Amino acid sequence: MAWDEAEQVLAEADLIHDQAAVDRALDSLAGDITRRLDGCRPLILGVMIGGMVPAGMLLPRLGFPLQLDYVHATRYRGALTGQAELEWRAEPGTPVRDRVVLVVDDILDEGHTLAGIVEALRAQGAAEVLTAVLVNKLHGRKHPGLHADFVGLEVPDRYVFGLGMDYKGLCRNAPGIFAVRESAVAAASATTAEERNP
Image (tube, rainbow, N blue to C red; front, side, top):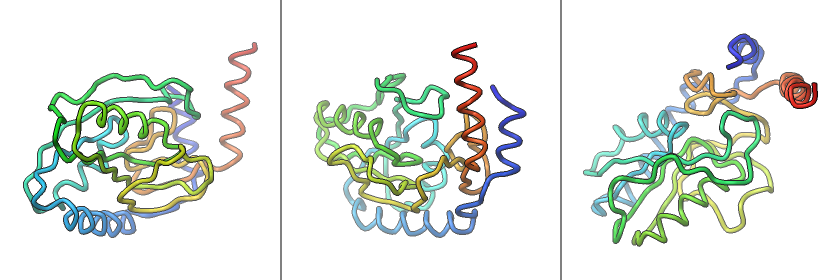
């Protein structure tokens, strides 16, 4: 892991949303989700690893009975860009058939991972699958037909980290949502290219 690099990236990063803005967004998300799911006896699935932080902050704000489980699927595997193939590390341990399921994740970027999870849950017989993300990244490269049902905040089309989102596996605990400076992304890409072609 690039500990020194992550420390420098964090020190130089641009703060996009501070903790207070995140708290307000989570309160709003909780209100919207409560209005939609109260009385549905939903199954909430946190998407590991990134969704662990927003799910943990969101769930105490939901004032109705729910069941909690998780899934773990990834396309990043520690890289800065997603790989083509979805890698399943853990499917839900709780049966989803005939259940209303809410999938909670950290970010909707291009959405291929989230779309794969939604498709798998539908194939397993879920009555309805809804999605909630702390952050929606603004760009035109989304998976066709995918949108988040509940969105906390929007961020520009930059590499962001904090509150569940990582920089090369680190900094998920950053107290806010930060964007990596463009110069740091370019340097990291150059280093990766060198490692591949010494």
